[in-house]
Length: 140
Image (cartoon, rainbow, N blue to C red; front, side, top):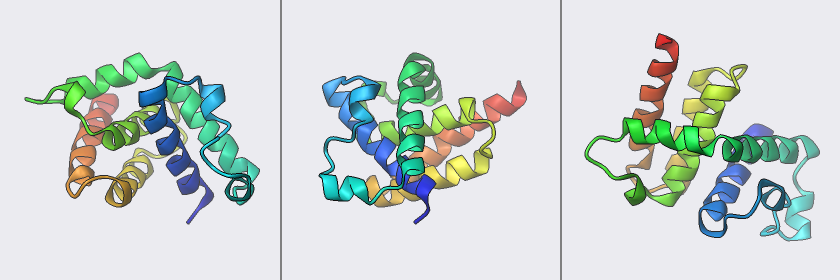
């Protein structure tokens, strides 16, 4: 597994936690849920990329959540699975603010992570939302 995939998984865990604890990005960026041995297994660039994702996502959370809400049809934002929401949030951050990462990479990564951490149909839902946002961004 590549270092960026590992960073995205750490970001998923941090953003999932944020939904329940509302800790700051600095607190989340310490990855306190990992013991020292597991944390030591991550390279510095992986941890830095994860911190960047978490910080950027939280700094733009209102805009990101608005984009998610705009994509929901006949579904209430509050009913979203928290794992799916975390994946959507960091992926939308990437689509909007990390333009050096191709949108196809961002969406593929989100789908793969959803297949491992989400429910059975999470990846389909996430693909649909992210593709809708990608289309909006390319129309501008």
